[in-house]
Image (tube, rainbow, N blue to C red; front, side, top):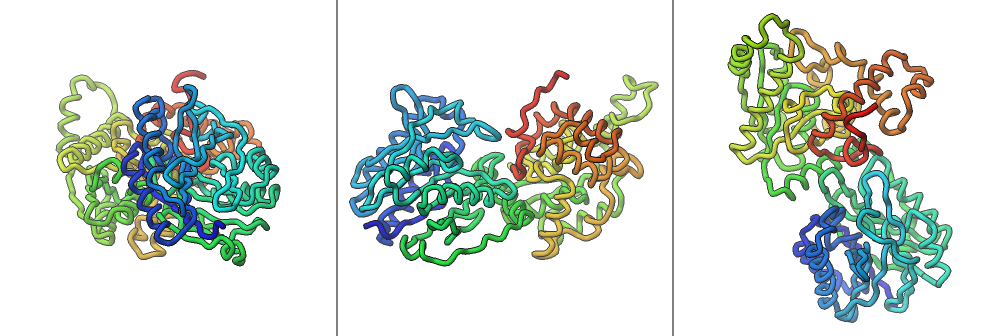
Length: 531
């Protein structure tokens, strides 16, 4: 009879079939040593999720299938493994779950519900499988579910009607704010409908814009969570099925600010590591956004792997210089200072003949930003450090950023953080130990590209701007609907116009961690031109 199950919450890498297979095999062997009857891994753990257009390459598909066969050969008669992978049959590709034991593939089942919304494109690659049927292992009828199959009733209903005794759901469910609460609601609905306990195993790790937060769990037949694994970290947990299901319910405490910060750390760390880099570089301006990025980078990679650069112009205040230095000292990172006045003078001299008779305007401001971008990219090239950008979601939404200037870089940990949320994460990080000087947090935000410049010269106060943007992006409300909620007509119309005009900039911005329901990446696909 099946008693012990190992939940293997692993950080796998997209495309690394050999490396992922090795990690799976090592976790399986640890389960064997602990005398587990079953080791459960996450959805598509052989390829990692999401493999995207790698799935269109026949050689990749074949290697992934061969890996499943090879893993099957490594299994014994006492311990089975449940893994996610891809399988091709009759010239159709499927997202599959496998039960491997006794040196062979005991059971293969295809994902029935294929998500095709938000960041998911599964109908681009996969065919839907039939409703699942239970599989017996060590005397227990297991009902296997693949991620989205848990979010809809049919698969669970079919399994329960055919005598399933335990639901096992393998997942690659990416993080967004309050996502665990949503998972619990879906899981509770399926458990209550079927009367069956549930083992839920989720992928963990960063993959481009997505962060998988793990938090695998076990739910008893009363729809109570009795076990939850770590968030944002790998973990393997051996459970005695009868003992765990009889355990008292646990309370899951949501802290979305802490979760957002942990997601930023994991997303950045894995993007750097999985891209083959060790070091990062960023411009540290003395402002709140770059200070938060520096803190995230240090927490993700260690202070010795973070290089900061201060690039003052004639408009940079003495306070910004001292704040950047103070922040770098608190974080323990190196800070280089490269004044950009010589480059500004050179550009103005070169452009003087063609700009004759023209007054200075945003053009000269953008030149400063692009000089900084050029210098940062030069240092990135010279020292092999991945360049981070520091713009927040509010700025990206309305185009308050310079293309090929402060938008230069490879990754942006703040991409899905509204400005007001940036301040909340700063406060959270400082609660763990002061790293962002209070003077940075309390001063008025400024790009410092002209005398006495403030963000509020060009934009509504961030509290108002973010409230409008939240309704625009997260709730998809029209300007008319937002105005009906009491916002000023001119302000809403201005923000709507800026959002539309900035689409071409957003399309060229670097990837960054998805944190909200609708990030400005895969979640937001609007035409560049049109009305």
